[in-house]
Image 1 (cartoon, helix red, strand yellow):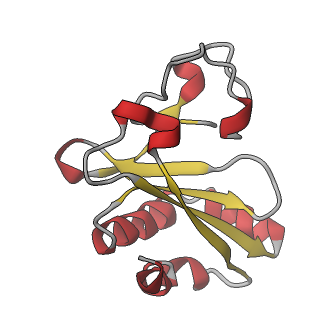
Image 2: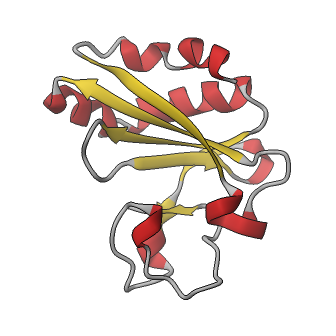
Length: 139
């Protein structure tokens, strides 16, 4: 999976002086539980760094992020979502596979849980035992 990432994030790295400075993969079942799509149980997190204002500009472009997400998801058949953030900051955007293998930006978890605050999966005050609904992420 990671050997395919350099090709998939090429578009992001063209946005000089911003660039992808770190990547990590994680098990989506830890967050989405039974709502995780079958055969797409991994997520990829990309941190964009360099000039922070330029990195924020990249995160403000749904076209760039969707294109990078589509490439990663197409090249990595076990990846269900891709999240982007500015390196060493909170917040970000998440894109994932929805109906008919279309990649779209996820809606905010606060739409489902009005008391939700924070981006970190460890800080989410949703009722115990309830998994994230697929198609929603921290905003």
